[in-house]
Length: 370
Image 1 (tube, rainbow, N blue to C red):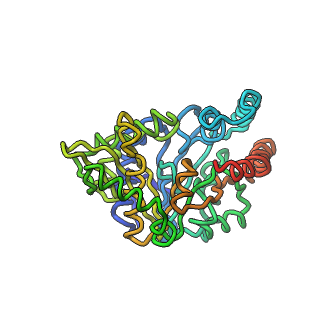
Image 2 (cartoon, rainbow, N blue to C red):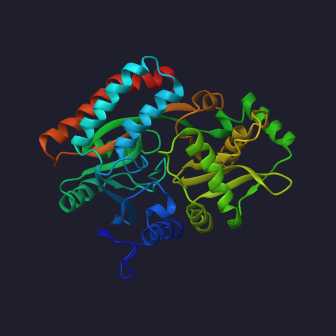
Image 3 (cartoon, rainbow, N blue to C red):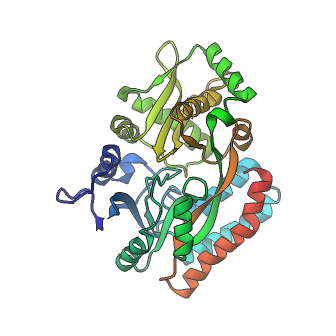
């Protein structure tokens, strides 16, 4: 069931070639070759005809949240408070830091993630979790002192998996509010902002087209400008190698807005699994004037591509008002963790985190549209 994807003798079930190519590329090159702020052991788990990438972390601190819950709930939380200006932040920050120390003492970063693609949003496709008890039993036997986890679980994109996790006694920890669109042709195209954005593109002089392999470096640069430079270095720092691998294999469909001189000014990369698509890579040239509307153009790139394919759109978190105006609605996303095999104090810490966030953070996210 668990195997090393770098092993030339490993037996793979038949899966989409793009998924196999990516899983093997990370195994051979290492996670840091794909995302420079991710250190993890990379394995794979074959179950019910699927291959789920597995990451194993042993307690290190400070890397991207795609493998480390402490980075998501504590370090990124502190950064978010700075960005949005949460009232009472000066009082909350010491409390959050104290909570972080308690979570580290409880080994929150000693963790094994299942179906972890090293992306800000892991789409789970048709994995409904029917095999979750078997998967959990195999992993707790091999990693008896690690938390087991599944990121990006919600009742909109993965309702069956969420139900299976709850039935199997996984702790559902609220992580963020995501912005999703059920039917882009109905919920987005009919709005004024659709027409406004289309007219902006017509005036921009930019050509919208698929990316080429030679664009990998510029795409990585534009993503870095926005998600790492402007937002947080805890976002995965994707490398040109990551872009090239996912572009050539077809795992991510990259669309770009190119200036007449050939320079890419905005990019959106789309990952589709099942009937849902999400943009794990978005970027634009932040040195351009705001009037150029490059974020609007990047958003158009992935929205239009998703609508053309008839897919539901998982718009991830952030830019809530912008996304609401374009037909999205909010859904709470969870980090499912299995802790029943761990010591009482570690179980208590994780369950307390879930209860506190459900009681206080979820109402605030809904109220403030975070």
